[in-house]
Image (cartoon, rainbow, N blue to C red; front, side):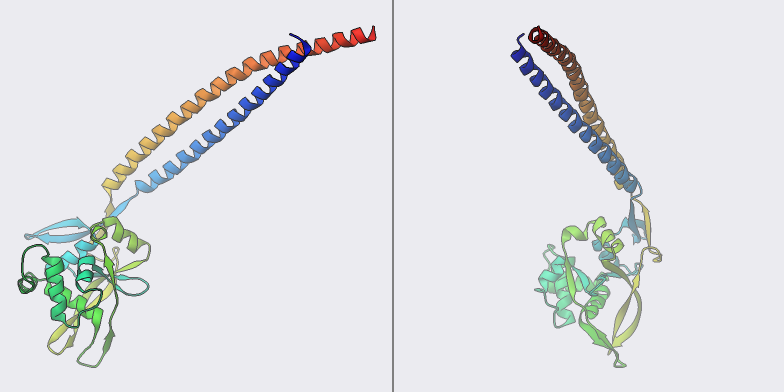
Length: 295
């Protein structure tokens, strides 16, 4: 191998070794990123296995049971005399959350009369799709125990003046989609984030003429004897399965990176041997050149 060829090979080997070192460094960064991913997965796993859900007592056919708390469930509880009646209000504006079917039926405006409001609730929400006329639906609403609840909701929306001249201001309303209404995580997130307040019917203490007006007061899961917070077995199982899958993927990626590092190290060792050989050969050529020049 001539001097120029040796120098060219020497430079090529040097460049290749630098490139391998860069690749190895990039892989080390990737391994560090996997370590961070594993830490995040573990933190989320710890959070997941501590997941809880809200539940409420219900009485069906004379039998007590528990159901998950959803927006739809707290409204449905109002049709049974054994159940407390609840409304959900916005923590900032005091607006009352209403099902989207009711809001759509009102055309986004509170009806002028209670009778009109009850007709909308019965026809568009409670008995929607059952083929009943509005009057039939309203009759069912009264017979099955829903009217008291929705009457209370109406006067929370409109406000009222009782027999003693005391004025209760009305409230606005917020539409809740059917999906959110049946999503237990939606209402729990709202309450835990301080975005919404759960209110329970406290007493029937005011009246407009002969009509009694129900009063709602703020409550919470910790103090409400009808509600409780329990471990969420479904979310815990999901957290465990998700953690195992993520950890397995991380381990597989880490093994692949280790394999690439091993190949790079083997290639680098081979190049290092050739690097030393070419470097030594160039050195000897230079020494021979000096001897010839000095002679």
